Image (tube, rainbow, N blue to C red; front, top):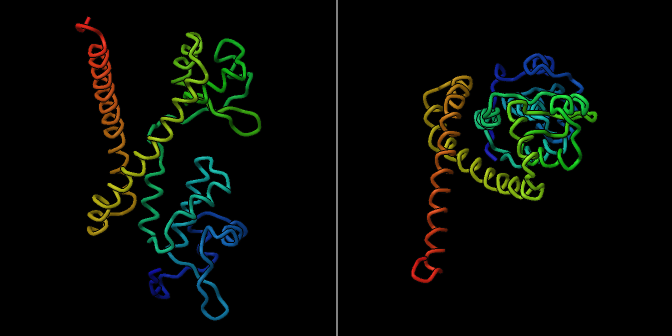
Length: 247
């Protein structure tokens, strides 16, 4: 682990840290005991905090805002190298920001049924969750992507099998994670060093990523459509080869 020498003016007291990140002393100490942030640097009998503490606490806050449980946050943070710089952690926060601007709306089961125009069964909710339309929320409520609800309900009306929705969700999760990891690595190794060298602020980098996201989504859709067309052509060719005289 590479250690940096902090000058006195770079160090924060606990009170200064709470003001900087908007977090209580109790929470900071709790996250320290959980290993989500390193212990303070000791100078005599006093403890001080650095930009690394700030970056890691802000990352915890970002993860919380996305609904991560404490155990999920612990697993996420455990995968971050101990020698990751505050700038590297800031990049993690930037890439965590939602790629779609629409935020789900919280609804009770009754509100969801009313919006759907009918009572939804457990199988219906399982299918809608697999389709990325309705997710279980806290206290028995649901997180609903309203713009996609009519699409999901239409698939239910057409008898789309729950098993197919779950299988498709597994495909999206598997390949989505791979794409996310590879895109993150591209940004980390090809773009981030350039901005870091020029002294670009984290806010500016966040703006770059926000502008990049719609183009990335469009590129993924275009790549998917191209691959589907190629898959269909290959399927037709295979069937033609298995059919005598191609008929």
